[in-house]
Image 1 (cartoon, rainbow, N blue to C red):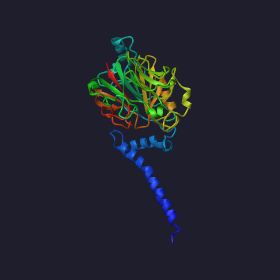
Image 2: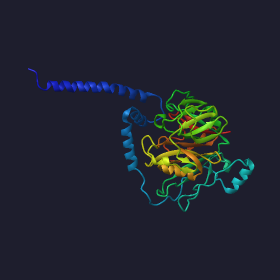
Image 3: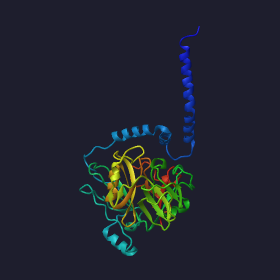
Image 4: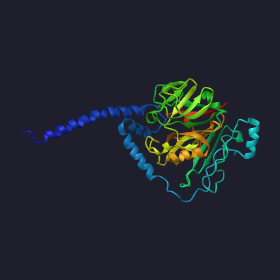
Length: 376
């Protein structure tokens, strides 16, 4: 006589077998991904794997809740001092003498006006990234308190003289996620003698849906209307609203796209009201963010900081002199701006102490594409 529970047990066994069969491909994919070469932590790679395999919504919700719970409170006491960055300050008299020595076309940046008063010592004052360079340094850095409502929040800024430097776009191990010659995936050893700085690129291409050009070849289709950091064959670098079609013209050496412009004509754009400023978080969530812009002289301005919204990032870049700017990558694990205190990539140091990745990040193969800045 058959028991009444036997059919139920059979259904359970079938369901269990079906679940195992469904999980095997996922488990294989996960193990395979985790076993591949990478310089990202296991936790980060696991989260990225979940996001790429149907759990992006869950990851986004969890991260949004986390960032909301850990956001700073408005108001309160301000800082008494700022973290010291760089070396010699760019004094006004030294700027005048340097300008005379170099050329009339060299335009050194003015001090970034404080947004919170009284200003702290050194706030907004540009400083050299290497001893002995003084105000004539082709890369200058500073820090500011960029959000009056959050007086303990600090943003780091960097100014890059594009006429006295060469900027390159370098593929990473996993990004861009297209078939492309990847080279060494770090700063090439042959070029480290002139290395001045490195900084992070944009979102994963699967999140930004933007284009990627390297060596004049379009490897990922360019999209009109996307903000683009573009390098031209004649050495110029710019941040533009791309309007040149799916394939880059022959004048372009490299191009990296990431969402629309956040600053245009020197002002934050209306698109900042949209919610597309992060694959995991929206425009208003306070999180580590980074961006890059171009000033009226054609020089680059990079900005990054913890507890930034898309709006505060845009405001900071515009306040520092950017006439056009774009957001780059976000979240503490992906934001890096590194300078090198000695020739040959010696004495690497992060722009801000809170940047999570080590300052040697781009001296070994990295998972993400990045930019490098070299002296001529």
